[in-house]
Image 1 (cartoon, one colour):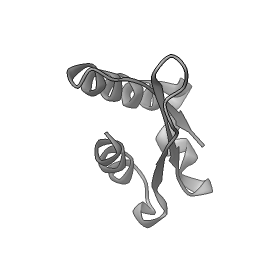
Image 2 (cartoon, rainbow, N blue to C red):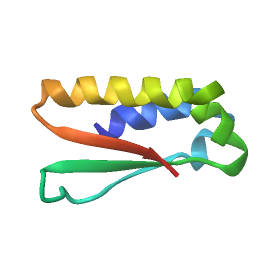
Image 3 (cartoon, rainbow, N blue to C red):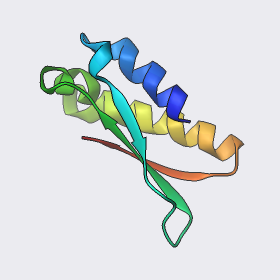
Length: 77
């Protein structure tokens, strides 16, 4: 899942070397939270107009997680 998020994020930004993805431990409900960190000037590219790109990233990640029986959340920091 981490690799998927890295690949998507690096394809969208101008500074792919600055992209990192961190993962939290599963909470009491079993949900794993992934945090995408990008350079300050790339935040608009990851979020998109009215959050459309961020929403699409979350949708793709959730779909991949369902295939592997995981519960996830994606946050953009």
